[in-house]
Image (cartoon, rainbow, N blue to C red; front, side):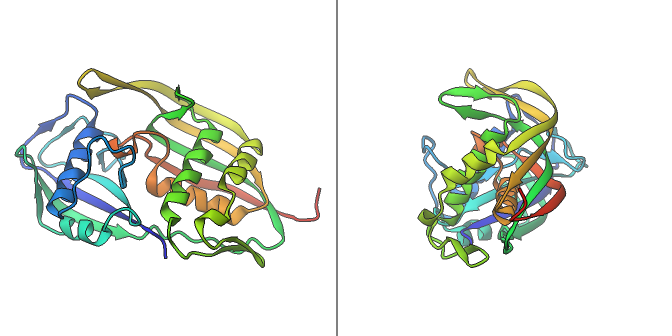
Length: 279
């Protein structure tokens, strides 16, 4: 069982809504009020929220700063079901509209639900070289209290690995490579070692990005970056590598994901399988 569910909500508005701060704060408020309607209280100062969200995007995949009548928009919330009652939250979204305490109304056009679709194929006796790319919307990594505002592969893998551990916490999923059990319970996998191995065996092929500073309101500013990066990775666990990309796609990467930072689309451009005996 995978302990994660994603809900994608497409909506429209009848009246204009303009955001003077980072739009992810608005999405966070929407989700928090949906949780409250389901009888779930989310502490504002909680170190980890039981969800991540995307910013609001239009049909062209652009982050918006305002909502206008006649437009269609969407956002996604991904839930950690080991930490919250996902069924109750999903049911709370199943209504024609969401009316916020401050008066804004979102008319639900479409809602889709996914359990993540996480799976890992048997790697067999093979190694692989992947060429892969990531499209980053505003994202911010942190390392030892320092902001990392460029598409660092080490920070990408570290974040995805920690998220995978959260998603699988308490699950009975078994990941195997050939006959080798990699995961019976979450503690059976050396995620830290696997992430270090991936980081050491990954190079950045190209990157185009720009740094931004997001206004989070109340005088708070968040340094971040957005753009596109391409990497090459060598690994002897290709199935687990692909699983990390799936998790990053579902939950995002980096810090402040409950505020809409860290939304990414990661995909494999090319995969070359190598014999395990090949040097």
